[in-house]
Image (cartoon, rainbow, N blue to C red; front, side):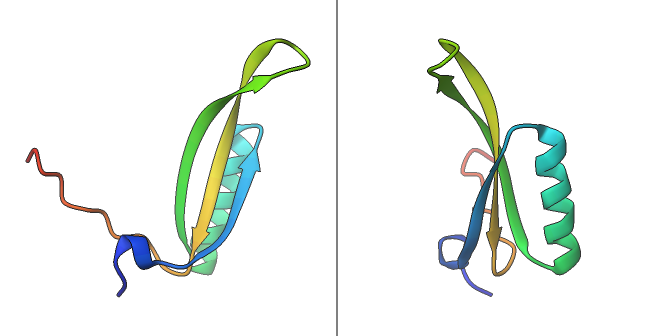
Length: 71
């Protein structure tokens, strides 16, 4: 198994809703890919506000979590 930083990134996808992102995560898990999911706020220049987007990254295998140094 490779370290977290060595897992091969296959694809990164952006979604407008958490439902769409979860659907992609479930599909990736069914196919055996490693997955990370996070969200971020981005400026919506047309509206003058911010919007939330969800990012799903697919890896060749599940990333390995680093031990928490505070534990």
